[in-house]
Length: 308
Image 1: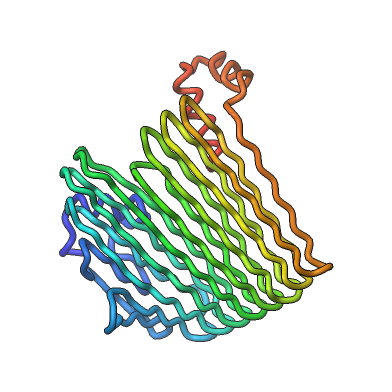
Image 2 (image 1 turned 135 degrees about the vertical axis):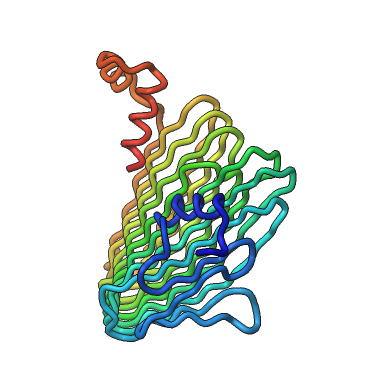
């Protein structure tokens, strides 16, 4: 990691928990270029030739291996766009850690847009972790617009952890998934906005296969004048089960919008949606304040526990 400066290394710690060169396969992108890369016998990473981005090819049967593909931006005014395709072979069981961090100390907007497409083979298992983080003292905005497409084959399982808890001024997250027979998808989103930040999350899941299932859970906190919009659409096209849940804490002058949609196109499609938006309960604050915390400290404790 000799190519990375102190700021970039700090961002890597935030988005990928990396303090040094990770074990296994990795591709680290810094300010629009590849800064470090490693492949293994079972995981290959190849640069695209027709557009910016990489292909990550995981051999069938690969077990207990990981791939790290973080992105860091530390130049003000930089707009970065990548297309990353993941090909996960049958019966593989892997962890993929992505995420993007922006440090913007200038007056121009910095932006990263990433399109990640997952082709998940039969009976494969994937845990995907994506963290977004922003920092910097400049007036320029920190903008992240991720797109995730997931195509799951028979019997596959995908767990996705989407986290954004600091410093991103604007984000528009788009997620699309299509599931075959017996496939299962779990998505857990944790989101915190403050100031005048805006965040849009849009999930579309098509349960095409027999006995396929999906669970989409969002927990968010909106502070000050920030605005959040969460929409989820689950389409049941076969004997399947789908569940979506949106729980949000609203504070100060913030706004939160929840838009559910369930399309049952089969008599054996069982679909459920739950949504709850509200302020922090007064008795929760009083209990923590009785232990010696200030009101602000009590709120921070409640928010941290809620998003965990």
